[in-house]
Image 1 (cartoon, rainbow, N blue to C red):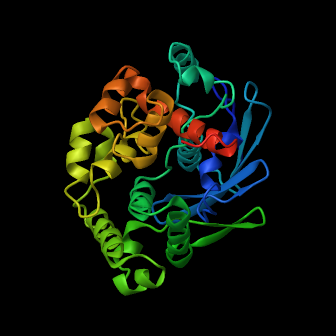
Image 2: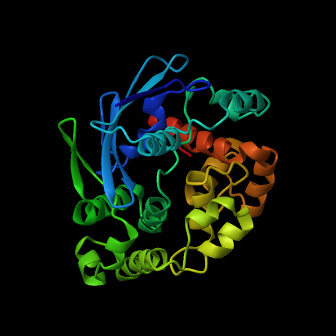
Length: 305
Protein backbone atom coordinates (compact mmCIF):
# COMPACT_ATOMS: atom_id res chain seq x y z
CA UNK A 1 0.00 0.00 0.00
CA UNK A 2 1.23 3.49 -0.85
CA UNK A 3 0.10 6.70 0.87
CA UNK A 4 0.87 10.08 -0.70
CA UNK A 5 1.20 13.23 1.41
CA UNK A 6 1.42 16.81 0.17
CA UNK A 7 2.59 19.08 3.01
CA UNK A 8 0.67 22.25 3.83
CA UNK A 9 3.46 24.76 3.40
CA UNK A 10 7.13 24.34 2.47
CA UNK A 11 9.09 21.21 3.31
CA UNK A 12 12.76 20.51 2.74
CA UNK A 13 12.79 16.84 3.70
CA UNK A 14 16.57 16.51 3.63
CA UNK A 15 17.14 19.43 6.01
CA UNK A 16 14.29 18.29 8.25
CA UNK A 17 15.71 14.79 8.71
CA UNK A 18 19.36 15.86 8.92
CA UNK A 19 19.46 15.09 12.62
CA UNK A 20 19.21 11.37 11.79
CA UNK A 21 22.62 11.32 10.13
CA UNK A 22 24.53 14.44 11.22
CA UNK A 23 26.03 12.74 14.28
CA UNK A 24 25.91 9.13 13.16
CA UNK A 25 23.59 6.44 11.87
CA UNK A 26 20.24 5.75 13.50
CA UNK A 27 19.35 2.08 12.87
CA UNK A 28 15.71 2.85 13.76
CA UNK A 29 15.57 5.65 11.17
CA UNK A 30 18.12 4.82 8.44
CA UNK A 31 18.34 7.25 5.55
CA UNK A 32 19.25 6.86 1.90
CA UNK A 33 19.16 9.23 -1.05
CA UNK A 34 15.67 10.74 -0.85
CA UNK A 35 14.35 8.00 1.39
CA UNK A 36 14.03 6.96 5.04
CA UNK A 37 12.93 3.73 6.70
CA UNK A 38 11.02 3.11 9.91
CA UNK A 39 9.19 0.32 11.75
CA UNK A 40 5.76 0.96 13.25
CA UNK A 41 4.73 -1.06 16.29
CA UNK A 42 1.03 -1.86 16.74
CA UNK A 43 0.30 -4.12 19.72
CA UNK A 44 2.55 -7.14 19.11
CA UNK A 45 2.95 -6.59 15.37
CA UNK A 46 5.72 -4.78 13.52
CA UNK A 47 5.22 -3.04 10.18
CA UNK A 48 8.24 -1.85 8.24
CA UNK A 49 7.77 1.04 5.86
CA UNK A 50 9.74 3.37 3.64
CA UNK A 51 9.15 7.07 2.94
CA UNK A 52 10.38 8.59 -0.30
CA UNK A 53 10.26 12.27 -1.20
CA UNK A 54 10.49 14.29 -4.37
CA UNK A 55 10.17 17.91 -5.43
CA UNK A 56 11.50 21.12 -3.96
CA UNK A 57 10.42 22.81 -0.72
CA UNK A 58 7.37 24.41 -2.32
CA UNK A 59 6.12 21.30 -4.13
CA UNK A 60 7.38 18.46 -1.95
CA UNK A 61 5.55 15.13 -2.06
CA UNK A 62 5.98 12.25 0.37
CA UNK A 63 5.21 8.66 -0.59
CA UNK A 64 4.84 6.09 2.19
CA UNK A 65 5.29 2.49 1.06
CA UNK A 66 3.90 -0.17 3.42
CA UNK A 67 4.43 -3.51 1.67
CA UNK A 68 1.47 -5.85 2.11
CA UNK A 69 -0.43 -3.67 4.62
CA UNK A 70 -4.18 -3.13 4.15
CA UNK A 71 -5.46 -2.59 7.71
CA UNK A 72 -6.88 0.98 7.78
CA UNK A 73 -5.94 1.41 11.45
CA UNK A 74 -2.29 0.61 10.73
CA UNK A 75 -2.29 2.86 7.67
CA UNK A 76 -3.72 5.75 9.69
CA UNK A 77 -1.20 5.21 12.51
CA UNK A 78 1.75 5.14 10.11
CA UNK A 79 0.49 8.29 8.43
CA UNK A 80 0.41 10.05 11.81
CA UNK A 81 3.91 8.77 12.56
CA UNK A 82 5.23 10.15 9.26
CA UNK A 83 3.55 13.49 9.89
CA UNK A 84 5.36 13.54 13.24
CA UNK A 85 8.70 12.54 11.72
CA UNK A 86 8.54 15.31 9.10
CA UNK A 87 7.07 17.94 11.43
CA UNK A 88 4.09 18.52 9.16
CA UNK A 89 1.98 20.13 11.89
CA UNK A 90 4.34 23.12 12.12
CA UNK A 91 2.86 26.33 10.69
CA UNK A 92 5.87 27.57 8.73
CA UNK A 93 4.11 30.45 6.92
CA UNK A 94 3.06 31.96 10.26
CA UNK A 95 6.54 31.41 11.67
CA UNK A 96 8.20 33.05 8.67
CA UNK A 97 5.92 36.09 9.00
CA UNK A 98 6.97 36.41 12.64
CA UNK A 99 10.65 35.77 11.83
CA UNK A 100 10.77 38.80 9.53
CA UNK A 101 10.48 40.99 12.62
CA UNK A 102 13.41 39.32 14.40
CA UNK A 103 16.95 40.47 13.62
CA UNK A 104 18.45 36.98 13.80
CA UNK A 105 15.65 34.78 12.51
CA UNK A 106 15.02 36.87 9.40
CA UNK A 107 18.48 35.95 8.11
CA UNK A 108 17.88 32.23 8.66
CA UNK A 109 14.65 31.85 6.69
CA UNK A 110 16.27 31.77 3.26
CA UNK A 111 19.15 29.32 3.95
CA UNK A 112 16.88 27.06 6.04
CA UNK A 113 13.71 27.44 3.99
CA UNK A 114 11.47 24.40 4.40
CA UNK A 115 13.20 23.16 7.56
CA UNK A 116 10.63 21.65 9.91
CA UNK A 117 11.07 20.28 13.44
CA UNK A 118 11.34 16.50 13.14
CA UNK A 119 9.46 15.13 16.14
CA UNK A 120 10.24 11.80 17.76
CA UNK A 121 7.86 9.14 16.39
CA UNK A 122 7.55 7.45 19.81
CA UNK A 123 7.73 8.81 23.38
CA UNK A 124 10.02 6.09 24.77
CA UNK A 125 12.44 6.64 21.91
CA UNK A 126 12.63 10.34 22.75
CA UNK A 127 13.29 9.77 26.45
CA UNK A 128 15.91 7.09 25.92
CA UNK A 129 17.60 9.39 23.43
CA UNK A 130 17.60 12.19 25.99
CA UNK A 131 19.30 9.95 28.53
CA UNK A 132 21.91 8.97 25.94
CA UNK A 133 22.64 12.63 25.18
CA UNK A 134 23.19 13.80 28.75
CA UNK A 135 26.60 15.39 29.32
CA UNK A 136 28.25 13.88 26.23
CA UNK A 137 28.70 15.05 22.65
CA UNK A 138 26.02 14.04 20.17
CA UNK A 139 28.31 11.77 18.16
CA UNK A 140 28.92 9.60 21.23
CA UNK A 141 25.24 9.79 22.18
CA UNK A 142 24.18 8.54 18.75
CA UNK A 143 26.74 5.74 18.88
CA UNK A 144 25.51 4.38 22.21
CA UNK A 145 21.89 4.74 21.15
CA UNK A 146 22.63 2.88 17.91
CA UNK A 147 24.23 0.02 19.85
CA UNK A 148 21.15 -0.17 22.06
CA UNK A 149 18.83 -0.34 19.04
CA UNK A 150 20.89 -3.04 17.32
CA UNK A 151 21.19 -5.09 20.52
CA UNK A 152 17.54 -4.96 21.62
CA UNK A 153 15.58 -3.85 18.54
CA UNK A 154 14.10 -6.29 16.05
CA UNK A 155 15.49 -5.96 12.48
CA UNK A 156 13.08 -6.00 9.54
CA UNK A 157 13.78 -6.02 5.84
CA UNK A 158 12.04 -3.12 4.10
CA UNK A 159 12.39 -2.95 0.33
CA UNK A 160 15.78 -4.62 0.51
CA UNK A 161 17.34 -2.73 3.41
CA UNK A 162 17.40 -3.38 7.14
CA UNK A 163 15.45 -1.21 9.58
CA UNK A 164 15.39 -1.92 13.32
CA UNK A 165 12.27 -1.46 15.40
CA UNK A 166 13.12 0.66 18.42
CA UNK A 167 12.98 -1.72 21.42
CA UNK A 168 9.79 -1.59 23.45
CA UNK A 169 9.58 -0.88 27.17
CA UNK A 170 9.14 -4.54 28.16
CA UNK A 171 12.33 -5.51 26.34
CA UNK A 172 14.42 -2.72 27.85
CA UNK A 173 12.92 -3.38 31.30
CA UNK A 174 14.46 -6.87 31.17
CA UNK A 175 17.89 -5.57 30.15
CA UNK A 176 20.74 -5.95 32.61
CA UNK A 177 22.76 -2.93 33.62
CA UNK A 178 25.93 -4.94 33.01
CA UNK A 179 24.87 -5.59 29.42
CA UNK A 180 24.23 -1.89 28.81
CA UNK A 181 27.64 -1.13 30.26
CA UNK A 182 29.12 -3.30 27.50
CA UNK A 183 27.42 -0.98 25.00
CA UNK A 184 29.42 1.90 26.59
CA UNK A 185 26.61 3.29 28.71
CA UNK A 186 27.80 4.63 32.03
CA UNK A 187 26.46 2.67 34.98
CA UNK A 188 24.19 5.53 35.95
CA UNK A 189 22.75 5.95 32.45
CA UNK A 190 22.23 2.21 32.19
CA UNK A 191 20.24 2.34 35.41
CA UNK A 192 18.25 5.30 34.09
CA UNK A 193 17.29 3.48 30.88
CA UNK A 194 16.23 0.32 32.68
CA UNK A 195 14.37 2.29 35.36
CA UNK A 196 12.51 4.33 32.75
CA UNK A 197 11.56 1.21 30.80
CA UNK A 198 10.29 -0.51 33.94
CA UNK A 199 8.19 2.53 34.88
CA UNK A 200 6.59 2.50 31.42
CA UNK A 201 6.16 -1.28 31.28
CA UNK A 202 4.45 -1.53 34.66
CA UNK A 203 2.25 1.52 34.12
CA UNK A 204 3.86 3.81 36.69
CA UNK A 205 4.53 6.24 33.83
CA UNK A 206 1.71 6.51 31.29
CA UNK A 207 3.34 8.17 28.29
CA UNK A 208 0.08 8.29 26.33
CA UNK A 209 -1.60 10.26 29.13
CA UNK A 210 1.07 12.98 28.90
CA UNK A 211 -0.37 14.10 25.55
CA UNK A 212 -3.32 15.73 27.33
CA UNK A 213 -1.29 17.24 30.20
CA UNK A 214 -0.26 20.87 30.57
CA UNK A 215 3.43 21.63 30.16
CA UNK A 216 4.09 22.02 33.89
CA UNK A 217 2.34 18.73 34.62
CA UNK A 218 4.43 16.92 32.00
CA UNK A 219 7.62 18.32 33.53
CA UNK A 220 6.49 17.36 37.02
CA UNK A 221 5.64 13.77 36.03
CA UNK A 222 8.79 13.14 34.03
CA UNK A 223 11.17 14.61 36.58
CA UNK A 224 9.99 12.20 39.27
CA UNK A 225 12.04 9.54 37.47
CA UNK A 226 15.77 9.13 38.00
CA UNK A 227 17.71 10.46 35.05
CA UNK A 228 15.03 12.82 33.75
CA UNK A 229 15.47 16.45 34.73
CA UNK A 230 13.96 19.67 33.43
CA UNK A 231 16.30 19.60 30.40
CA UNK A 232 14.95 16.22 29.28
CA UNK A 233 11.35 17.18 30.06
CA UNK A 234 11.49 20.41 28.06
CA UNK A 235 13.01 18.67 25.05
CA UNK A 236 10.27 16.04 25.37
CA UNK A 237 7.64 18.77 25.24
CA UNK A 238 9.25 20.37 22.19
CA UNK A 239 10.51 17.38 20.19
CA UNK A 240 7.96 14.69 21.05
CA UNK A 241 4.70 16.41 21.98
CA UNK A 242 5.36 19.26 19.56
CA UNK A 243 4.57 22.01 22.06
CA UNK A 244 5.45 25.35 20.53
CA UNK A 245 5.61 27.40 23.73
CA UNK A 246 8.78 25.75 25.06
CA UNK A 247 12.40 26.91 25.18
CA UNK A 248 14.95 24.47 26.71
CA UNK A 249 17.07 27.34 28.03
CA UNK A 250 19.27 25.03 30.08
CA UNK A 251 20.62 23.28 26.99
CA UNK A 252 24.24 24.23 26.27
CA UNK A 253 23.73 24.42 22.49
CA UNK A 254 20.60 26.56 22.93
CA UNK A 255 22.54 28.91 25.19
CA UNK A 256 25.37 29.18 22.66
CA UNK A 257 22.88 29.91 19.87
CA UNK A 258 21.22 32.73 21.81
CA UNK A 259 24.57 34.17 22.85
CA UNK A 260 25.83 34.06 19.25
CA UNK A 261 22.79 35.60 17.59
CA UNK A 262 21.63 38.05 20.28
CA UNK A 263 24.49 38.88 22.63
CA UNK A 264 27.69 38.93 20.54
CA UNK A 265 28.90 35.73 22.12
CA UNK A 266 28.61 37.03 25.67
CA UNK A 267 27.09 34.87 28.38
CA UNK A 268 23.32 34.87 28.95
CA UNK A 269 21.44 33.45 31.90
CA UNK A 270 18.64 30.92 31.51
CA UNK A 271 16.20 33.58 32.70
CA UNK A 272 17.36 36.03 30.01
CA UNK A 273 17.01 33.37 27.32
CA UNK A 274 13.49 32.51 28.47
CA UNK A 275 12.49 36.18 28.49
CA UNK A 276 13.57 36.62 24.89
CA UNK A 277 11.96 33.35 23.81
CA UNK A 278 8.60 34.34 25.32
CA UNK A 279 8.36 37.10 22.69
CA UNK A 280 7.82 34.34 20.12
CA UNK A 281 4.81 32.91 21.95
CA UNK A 282 3.68 29.62 20.41
CA UNK A 283 6.63 29.68 17.97
CA UNK A 284 9.34 29.40 20.63
CA UNK A 285 10.42 25.82 19.97
CA UNK A 286 10.42 26.39 16.20
CA UNK A 287 12.54 29.52 16.61
CA UNK A 288 14.98 27.54 18.79
CA UNK A 289 15.11 24.87 16.08
CA UNK A 290 16.10 27.50 13.50
CA UNK A 291 18.67 29.10 15.79
CA UNK A 292 20.37 25.76 16.45
CA UNK A 293 20.43 24.93 12.74
CA UNK A 294 21.63 28.45 11.98
CA UNK A 295 24.46 28.07 14.47
CA UNK A 296 25.60 24.93 12.65
CA UNK A 297 25.57 26.93 9.40
CA UNK A 298 27.84 29.59 10.84
CA UNK A 299 30.27 26.93 12.06
CA UNK A 300 30.22 25.27 8.62
CA UNK A 301 31.38 28.50 6.98
CA UNK A 302 33.89 29.30 9.73
CA UNK A 303 31.77 31.77 11.69
CA UNK A 304 32.09 29.98 15.01
CA UNK A 305 30.67 31.35 18.25
